[in-house]
Image 1 (cartoon, rainbow, N blue to C red):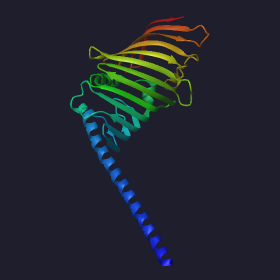
Image 2 (image 1 turned 90 degrees about the horizontal axis):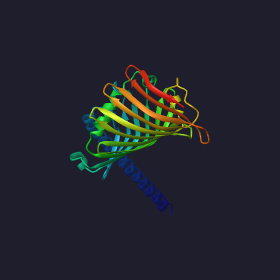
Image 3 (image 1 turned 135 degrees about the horizontal axis):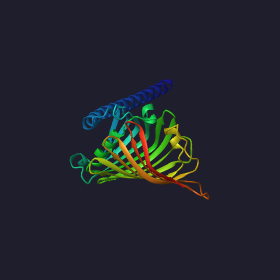
Image 4 (image 1 turned 135 degrees about the vertical axis):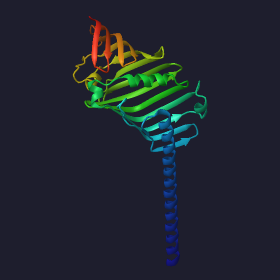
Length: 281
């Protein structure tokens, strides 16, 4: 009886060891496959974009390509450190062959963007951003993008954001909610953009909500305590010059709002801001 029991225990232990070995081997194989695919995707992205992109792991599920722990390192022309825990891309293989009229869906989970001190204090050009957006709008395919639980890290604090956007033809639409981390009242931005004459970028921005994010981005500016609403028209031209005009109103419900109309010009390289017209009521 004892011999039979001893044999059963030995067999059970052997089976358990085999199961553990198979599970460990499978995990090791899958992890190795993810790393190899990540390396292959990384080489393609770097060759196509010229950006310092790293993709440690990637998996392919039919029409979905999932990239993990993606990083776009800062570079002189665009000093942003971008990290995404998971990037899910859904597209057919024909997008690579003939992208015109075809759609790509991208979902970024737990994205983190870090701004250096110079980007917040001023003196950095928006020219790289203009060129990047124009190249993006020139892509012949359509795109839907969503960023969930994102964070923007600045030297003065952290902003939490969610983003949903779409590119259809030559036009771009974005819906962005952003607030200092831990605060419940966000600022909502609705953006529509298009290329103008192939060189400048025209943007229309509808604004509503709390303006407290201004204190995080530009600590020297004291934002009003009341909610803000309005529309701003912007044009970004070659050389990083931004022309803007718009109307903003400040005031909580039940209060007489304060209205601001303005026309301005900002040189992002020199940091010079000129206001040619303003009206405050």
